[in-house]
Length: 116
Length: 113
Image (cartoon, rainbow over all chains, first blue to last red; front, side, top):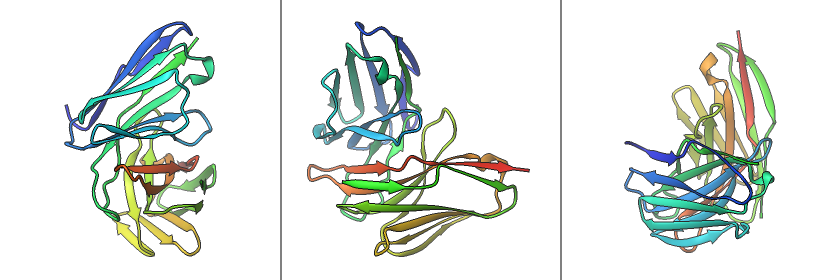
């Protein structure tokens, strides 16, 4: 595997279900991100982990719970979601470097989530 | 906070040149990125500007003016495969490490024959 991978690619769940999204990066990066992409809206940053510590929680409801067990893996645990949470959830990774350095974010293909 | 504006849609002809503009108002700035996203796929990195001026990369160029809060992406010799959404994003650094990208809504470019 290369780059950033995400599983599953598609997920349909009921409002009472509990599920988890998985992201794995094979780039040797030390920062990982969760984004939400809804139709007609900008990509919204949800969480940032740098060196396995959460450094940003962008006012995300508690029904979304991230976990970063090591620098290569990132999870998003989902419970009691709402239909408006249906969206594409993208994972990204980057290297933590000095100010002004490129350290662009590399994105995974996303998980298309539908909440019924 | 950050506010990023870019046109919603643009149409251009194969072989032509198109310029996609992006304006931003930000509380912090550490670079501006352009990403390309084909339908159903991950965004892919195109270009990066942190200083004023033009960065050229093959058929793609990006320009930045920090004083005006303005950037553009220039695509030359358009090909049908360039039909995609082009995302402008402003970066701010996080004190705990990593970086925070704030994205515009994206410009959907359609290339026609």
